Image (cartoon, helix red, strand yellow):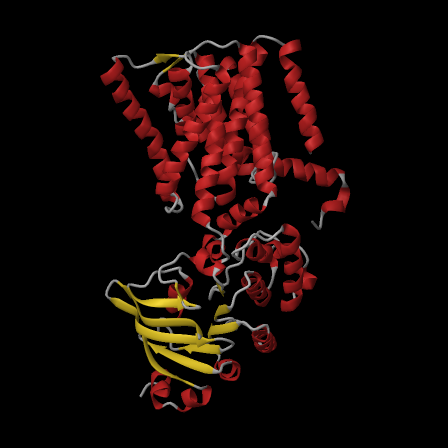
Length: 239
Length: 304
């Protein structure tokens, strides 16, 4: 059974069809890439899935349950976490508390403070942030702030993680580290849907890739199929 | 810090014994402003939603005392004043806390004017008079009730701040979108916190009204009760829990002194003092205290 499934999902902003009648799915344990030129509707689709926006048409199901139009905190507690394209940490809150908020509020059951602190320590080690201590999140580098965001998302114990341009703005070393992090998240049994512009990264990380253009899905397939698709090359390079 | 709070509390509790009379009335009014400011900070200081509704909650408390003061015992009246304000806050919050930023501030500002004018219309239409008399209570009782409300306000603020909900409220203030995506039910948390903060404002209003003995809508729903807590919190500094307490106490005392010494220029003088403070003390009195403390203890705290 797919973890995430969407049918005919549509969102208009005024006259602009940001996402029009898109079908998608993510299977258990899969890493799926979402690519497309700027303005293709990738982030809008993420916002529709995570509940930040409600679609005008279509249905979205998480583990078979209809989440269309649910509020983000409910969707989060049902097992879907996300990060943001423009990194959203809590700037003045110390790094461990940033992560702990996910543990304390992001799961369906009440978690004791001691358990949340334990999970936080484990996750900070997992993403490689043990050394930063109780620094406020705003004092970290961009790459580390993104790790805080990932750790906070993981703290909500998701089954599916949406990563919105995890690697944008990072240098070569940091991109390699981010790729390795994605692989390790996958090893934890978490499925991933990721938006990315760095082709080399997405080709190596994903099992399957979806291509959006002007709000429509124009192609879907394995990385090799997408790389060879005439339609995709036209969209990216022009005819 | 809790030790210091306890000492101040004991001194305050003993005040009516060794300084009866005017000093008790003066300190009652200072306590009242501390309650308004600390309860304002519980919601607005953390979430960043600028509420100008304190005057509405304070006024509802006053009217509760005016309407029920003769019929019910004082403690019941005070509790009912708090509950009535809290219900109002709950309703207003449920309707408006989807609004963000300046829209929320403007709505709460309008709420005070709306209730004031509605009540004015009602009183003149139904009772034929504008104001109401409030049951008389002796000054020492007013003082001790005010002190009890203050203790509860400060304890509530302290426990919320220390709890997971305090952290969640702060995260709402820093990035509400990230907070809701981390699983925090931001709407419910905001509404409940807003309603909790209004309890103390309403209770303070109920006991304060007994000191005034006569109220009308202009007295009860005076917007100064909305602006003062904001100014006092900023003057004291929101960064530390004791900041709003300090700010409210100092400004309320200054206000009282200026009113008695310079009755015609007091608003002007108070305005200048607050203006200078905001220009030169961006972190409020707390900033000043922390700087002095750092100097006294050398570099020990430099890296925190």
